[in-house]
Length: 103
Image 1 (spheres, rainbow, N blue to C red):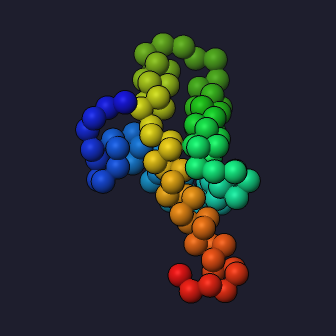
Image 2: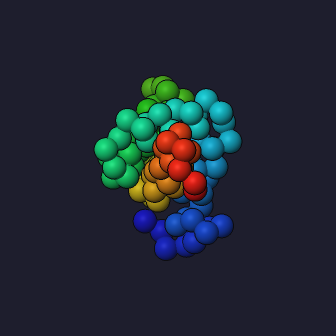
């Protein structure tokens, strides 16, 4: 993984993945659903990574070449655990709010 920080995130790829899943209501709902269905942040991070690869596969189809290599190499740079910890915090906050606890 790259050692360059970007906007407080591990790197540009991590920041960009987080940005896209949070700025699309359907993707954000799906990511939160994965958080609620996961046992912990690690499991969630693996699910997020699988989801990112699935999205890339859907977009790429059967193409091969430079662009495909760039897409998959970018996915490898994403710190999915970092994104998962932020989603996990959001999940925990939703649980506290649902249970009536003051956050």
